[in-house]
Amino acid sequence: MSPTVYGNLKMAAASLKSAKMRSFLTMLGVIIGVVSVVTVVSIGQGIKQQVGREINQLGPDMITIRPGNALQRDNTEGFKAFFNTSVNGSLANGDITTVQKTAGIRLAAPLALASGPLAVNGKNIDNQLVMATTEEMDGLLDKPVEYGEFFNQADVEDQPDVAVIGADVAQRLYGERNPLGSNFDYLGEKFLCAAL
Image (cartoon, rainbow, N blue to C red; front, top):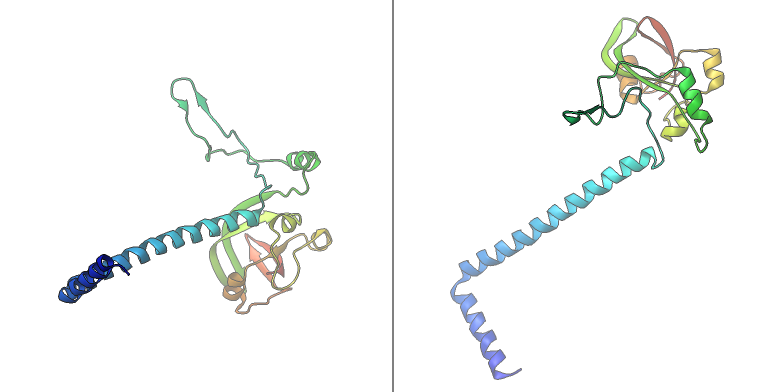
């Protein structure tokens, strides 16, 4: 080691010893800065991966079709809205048949959303989100059920009002996690719990 480098190291060590508190605070500031940057980058990457996983669960080739106009054009104001959420129209059975017959479509399932109370023996759960669909939804969601099986065409022919419920709803409504074969009321109609 050259005398100049040795002298510089000796002077730096002496400076650190003479100002211990300043050296400690400087070191602490550098450590906190590095940890902060690493934490922020890690959180950002984690959120990016989680959002990507959730999008990929639905499938990169899934298309949602809604009734109404997606764009409204006004000559004076340009585009009023990209998505028109106030459309009161609906899709008909012929529309789902057209989609199913379209080249390149593997599965198509209608979906309607509603909310209302669920009831079993006088026990109510208010404002539950209910999705009405067909057996093709099982293939689109590709989510395994914990108990039972997602309903199929034979189930619907035997019992037209068949439902798949969540574990939280089962616990709140029936007081158990596996109420397969039990009935519940929704808007005056009886539904059979086929899976959850």
